[in-house]
Figure 1 (cartoon, rainbow, N blue to C red):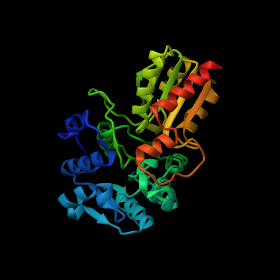
Figure 2 (spheres, rainbow, N blue to C red):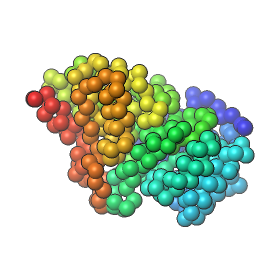
Figure 3 (tube, helix red, strand yellow):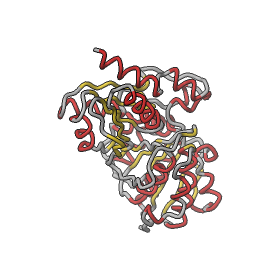
Length: 327
């Protein structure tokens, strides 16, 4: 099996720092760079390569790209087979199809066999926008997190996405990476280096700490600033690695404050909020407020309006934290 270069030596890394862009775009660019470094990397798609941005890889490496058609289950099975021959397959489609339609294949042919498959799904969450509830995966993290052996990653921006893709290629075992359609704000510092199973703590607050991932990290940072200005000392931690969860970092943030808030573009059932609550309930009982989609489907509309409608905003985080401390 070939080896990729260190994340620090990838020539395209710097182009993502500080740039607001969709995480799916960072994925497409990084795949091409990885393909140049490692001939064992192959890419599969379920007839959505223009949307998932794997078309960039297909153009440069047509003999290492496989369009499986609208056959997601077949795509996952084929990816597992390629992995067992020593290849490093990246299989991509929309999150709703990757985790819903092909769940059994991911469980049986990938995770049960510990096949070295990277499922990188785009169009996760409600920011799929006008495509509506049928295409808005709000349950995908829960579906992947429950499978033994599966690592689950939700990058916060393009810079972290590029690094997580490279690290996934270097890591042996099943990985699920959830990416988005909409442009997201750059939040990670230049010296940041992604590691599977590690969180990044921006700051620890004495009153409250917001644990977030994906695009909600930027909202959490905005909310924390507003809260600190109002006298509530609030910190933020990026838990892009939902599984394995950085238990040390979570314990550190929880024991330093009176309240932990989780913020995610996903159902509050089974995702980051559940992972955090489960750990804290057993190890450090503390008040937890979960911000996400509350047991409902999405709906059609512009992504920014949907985020506001479902309360996935800095303003709503501020409101919930203030209400807690009023009590």
